[in-house]
Image (cartoon, rainbow, N blue to C red; front, side, top):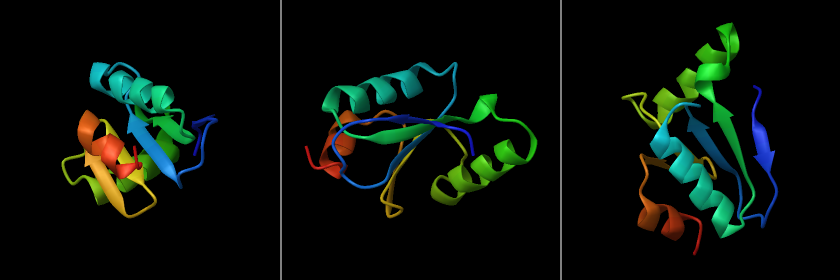
Length: 93
């Protein structure tokens, strides 16, 4: 699956599933950048075909509503929407 990696401090596997046109997704991505942690992000709307289907399967596994942003942390916890306090707590800040 095509995504982008942002280098930073390793706090485990952090993956942001987002839409390229979503303001809350951008706020979440900026929050992660400012915390200085390493994370991957995937713009699901820019994927095509099977890749997009696979990404939506993952999103819906963590977030049955299939809404964005969906942040998955260490394959154990998901945070749906821009929830700054919850995100900071989940990544140990």
